[in-house]
Length: 159
Image (cartoon, rainbow, N blue to C red; front, side, top):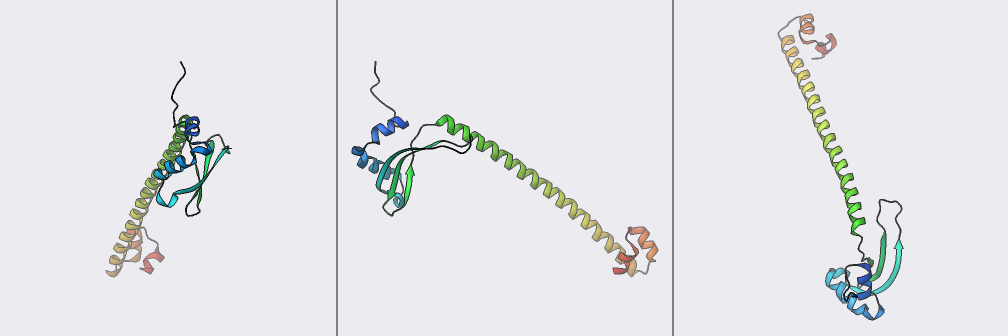
């Protein structure tokens, strides 16, 4: 038995239904129902040009319809069914995104931990300087302040 129907979502089906000069008006009307006002099609040209990718990871594109909007903008409408290839490129994208997100989160975590460590160290230094200043104001011998705080003789003199 021969099939009586075709799938308009496939490249073949779409071209069979809309890809002939006699169906241009039907196609323009169909696409204008889908497109925003600023992309309403005034004129279209059928092409069958394959755009091969530079790397294996990129998708092959088949540009079927070259369009010009009423405002003079030019754009391409592409219809193809390459779900397996789309799924593969989506998985690759998600893997790269996950690596990036993880690296960012780890970097942020390290940055926060390092910032906390630096902040604690600076707080301790300021606390020691405050104690040294209080001892100095009480006329405690500088040698005792050096021994008690671990600060240098010059640092205590500057306080």
